[in-house]
Image 1 (cartoon, rainbow, N blue to C red):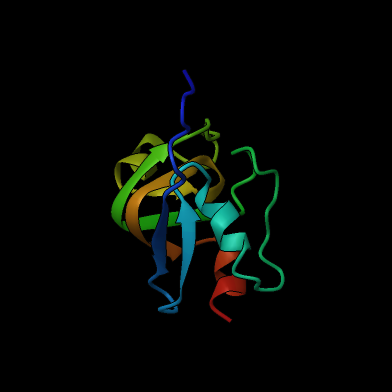
Image 2 (image 1 turned 60 degrees about the vertical axis):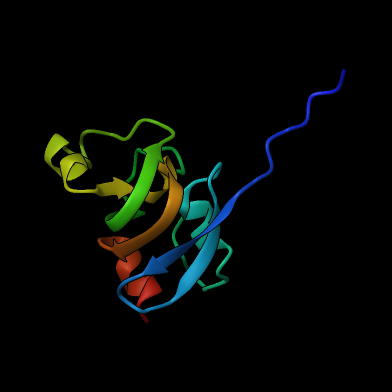
Length: 109
């Protein structure tokens, strides 16, 4: 008996700051999907939740945390208000986000 793998699901992530959108799979980080947009200079930092260059505010939509985020950069209050590191969360459906911090000037130019 063979077991079929779950098909990858791609959802749309909209960037509130610019109106742009990109596709992101539900099994990958928001940062990985954003990087595929092809914008020059998107900082990817450590990709492990410890540097904060990819901090975003999830304005709408559902996401799941896929790795730990440094409390130095993301407080409990941040988490409660949807401010997270894009390298550490994956979308669970359509998501709208605003880019904050160092990532903002690259994405919004």
